[in-house]
Amino acid sequence: MISFLIFLGVFLFMECVTWLTHKYLMHGFMWYFHEDHHQPKYANIFERNDIFFAIFAIPSIVLFSVGAEAGFNYLFFIGLGITAYGFCYFMIHDVLIHQRFKWFKTTKNRYLIGLRKAHKVHHKKMGKEGSEVFGMLYVPFKYYNM
Image 1 (cartoon, rainbow, N blue to C red):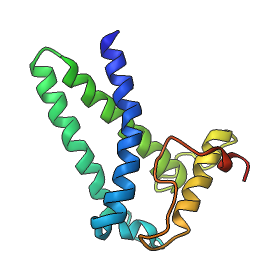
Image 2 (cartoon, helix red, strand yellow; image 1 turned 180 degrees about the vertical axis):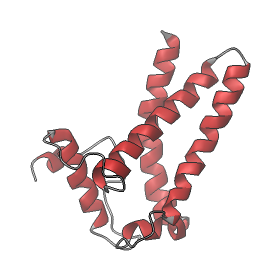
Image 3 (cartoon, helix red, strand yellow; image 1 turned 45 degrees about the vertical axis):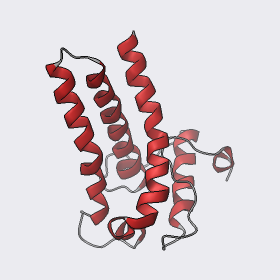
Image 4 (cartoon, rainbow, N blue to C red; image 1 turned 30 degrees about the vertical axis):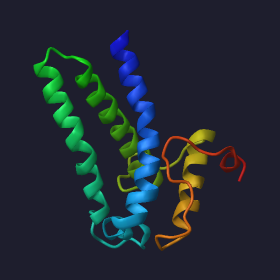
């Protein structure tokens, strides 16, 4: 039970980490890597922004490895929470919202539609200043009724 609570707590905490990272790092001093994500898309499937997947994967890999060697202790479940959040981020951000992979194009789910709308508002600003909605899973209620 404690392992599941660690996993769930880390998964939920990653939304805060994502919001802070997106607002202050990606739209801050790491804008060089994130900038192409706010530009019109071209033929290349990869973006400089994709480096953030690797940046977030490194702690997961280390935590999995160290936690597994220590008998699947709490570090393993922290790594699992980060990885699960990363998988959800990929499915929602890259598959559902940006359609980088054409696995499912439409939804009638109110929550997922709200996510799309909130992210669209984020991308209205092409530059690093003035954007809003920096998280991934939390959607302010106003985007459900747009």
